[in-house]
Amino acid sequence: MLLSSCVVWRHVEWDDFRAECPAGDEQLQRLVWERLDDGLAWLVSLGAEPVWEDTENPRTTGKRFDPRALTELLARDVELETSLDPDAGRPLVLATGGFAKRVAQDRGLLLRANPWSDGAGLELGLARGAAVTDGLAEFYGRAMLAPPARISEADFVPLSQLYGRWARVFAEDGTEITPASVSWSENDLAQTIGRQPHGRAWYVLDDGGLAQAQERVDAARVAGGTVVDPAKLSFDTPPGSRVAVHVAAAVTHTIGGLRVDTRARVLDQAGAPLDGLYAAGVDAGGVATGGYASGLAQALVLGLVAAEDLAG
Ligand SMILES: Cc1cc2nc3c(=O)[nH]c(=O)nc-3n(C[C@H](O)[C@H](O)[C@H](O)COP(=O)(O)OP(=O)(O)OC[C@H]3O[C@@H](n4cnc5c(N)ncnc54)[C@H](O)[C@@H]3O)c2cc1C
Image (cartoon, rainbow, N blue to C red; front, top):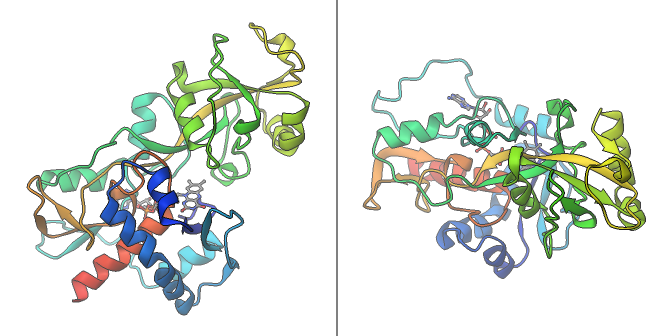
């Protein structure tokens, strides 16, 4: 959360949520969609000050916060660096942020997330007999600059190569892989790039594309990205190509994970809740399967329902 753009959002239309994340658990999706506005009001009641009162995307609604201010507010009463005995018999809410690190390593992709979320919550759940959802290899990702550019955590947002919808896309061997259409989040394009050898590709822009992407391309150059004249590539590009940017798929967070119910209780293989074990955030799987939805909304709503269940 600290590294994020901190836009906590949902789709405006329920049908859009279902259409964009078609393989997700409908009940969990309904929970997030219906409870998010209350969750946001709760954050504001705690003193969180929105930076945006709504998103800038007509398909979505929500609020944007300053990630550091929100993290500090929510961590105010958290005791850090205390040791935890997960077997002490007390209820436990897993919220270790999924296993992006592991997926990035296994698939040879870049990591666009904190370097600690490597599946500790998943492992603990599995050891207690938890079931997992489909889509364990699925991730929400972005195209970033391919090495040798080095991207610091502070550059995860500004150096996202979020203009692939205006580019022709080529694998490193010159095969064109431009999709017929690209979603607004470009998560689908990141998946396509992630399936190429080394998870890399070239974005090739003409004048029209460059007009949309100029600022980001300039920033890519400054950051040491490989930004070249398309004539210098080892394959032919379409007439009118003006610039080529070497990009790589990066993993932001996992989509699959522990199976939970609408009270965030972790379920076993038979669908029964495991005693005292909850999962919130992207440790829980199955909300955005097949697409992309707000991980922060999932974290907020599942965290709240887990707390309500524990209090109730
Ligand atoms: C650059 C970037 C931009 C993003 N922008 C947005 C956005 O605008 N909107 C949106 O909805 N989502 C966004 N996301 C995704 C969003 O940040 C995540 O989906 C969300 O933070 C998931 O919440 P979480 O609580 O599950 O995990 P996290 O917020 O990742 O928190 C998990 C925490 O657990 C810690 N941890 C890991 N393992 C252990 C362990 N074994 N023991 C103790 N602690 C552990 C981690 O260090 C981390 O602090 C963005 C992410 C990134 C990286």
